[in-house]
Image 1 (cartoon, helix red, strand yellow):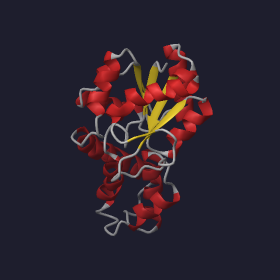
Image 2 (cartoon, one colour; image 1 turned 90 degrees about the horizontal axis):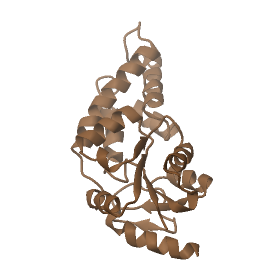
Image 3 (tube, helix red, strand yellow; image 1 turned 60 degrees about the horizontal axis):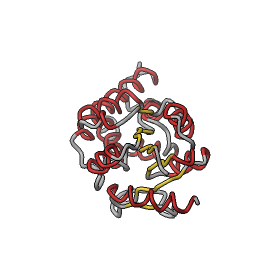
Image 4 (cartoon, one colour; image 1 turned 30 degrees about the vertical axis):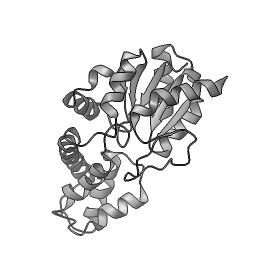
Length: 224
């Protein structure tokens, strides 16, 4: 029986992967109007967090003399990270949810399933967005980029007192699946045709999160 569900956030609960990528181009457009620097950083460090990406962007802007002569990587990296956070918070708060997200959270909560967030977004901005979307009350706890997906799952198991084989992690990217595999818990891939999921070959898939309760029954039956 599935007792606990861990949700990734971007691309799983909210259609925000595109928003986040576009925000990097938007905040750097005064100095990198072609988007060449941002595209290069995305290609070389696709899994880097916002702070790593903005630092790499600042470094390249300075090296190409696109910023004032006395600019420092640390100062500009921090400035760009703050600009990025402000830009995405507003857009994601008002952005479209993934199919069935609100109803699935309500249904699973009413079933007595413990819900957690396990995201690659830092906890501070993530908590603010969840508050603004009025979703915070659904979750027992919120885990973010301060630890890996696998380490967050281990913390979730300890906090909830739940065995790994009674936990499902729902996500849309390879780091979600790998985290679940490392912890030997179940993984469900969120795959929507117009979104950039990288886990479409996973055995358990949903296109609408309202499908989760029925899928959990299948998972439990296959465990026997």
